[in-house]
Image 1 (spheres, rainbow, N blue to C red):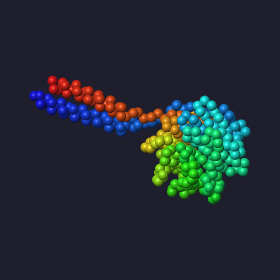
Image 2 (cartoon, rainbow, N blue to C red):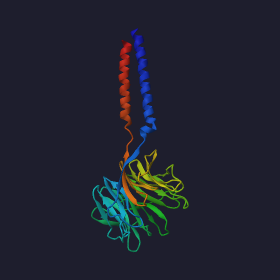
Image 3 (cartoon, helix red, strand yellow):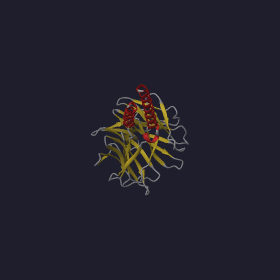
Length: 332
């Protein structure tokens, strides 16, 4: 009788473990368990960003809580800024003629571009004390620095035929980056480690396509909600990519791409336009347009997916506890 009861207990053991395994599989497969959301939107308005036809403040990049972007003053001039969470500091390249935009930041290094008094565009690197001009030698019609990670800087230039090409600058050498599908131009906008994002045009009458480049392969990124006016990837941090897509009604929406899922990001105060321009860990920045057509920067937070393995551990622990009680009763 004891051996029969033991066999029954073993059967119960396997049934219980099987049920736990099914529960684990359901947790892993359940979309809601993996869903990420973006919340905690906070508006950013540089107090000097009060004028111009492009009225307001644009946030472009974030690193370690520091945010860069630009604002338009009451004379219509554009100035870069650095915001450390409490204070806005204006950034004007000394070679600029009333136009400086800060685009990306990595620790203390800030990149962007300015226009000189002849109307020529130049990239710049600002290390906190010194501005260094960045001119791709092939960029005879302008160089635009857009993103940075460590010593790497990405952006794009226009050649002597007016065609855009992406570039990677490692502090010594400029390397041209052309997506093979970008028959009408490539723009690189963000970098994280060895991965670079941007967008390309394959047809002048249609919108762009985002891409990620891992150093050897270009992979196209098209938000499934995008209409014919396309998708642009603007920033990357780890495995997360942010950018903007235009829907079939020509409204602009930010997006977060996790590597498997596209999540639309719309500032709750936005009317028709939200753009996500930068990311650092779980923090994103961008800008939106309100119902008075004013432009405001914003920050927001990515809410991580629930921790799956602790849930599985709890489920298995509960299953074993149940198994022990049932086995004890069966053997008794």
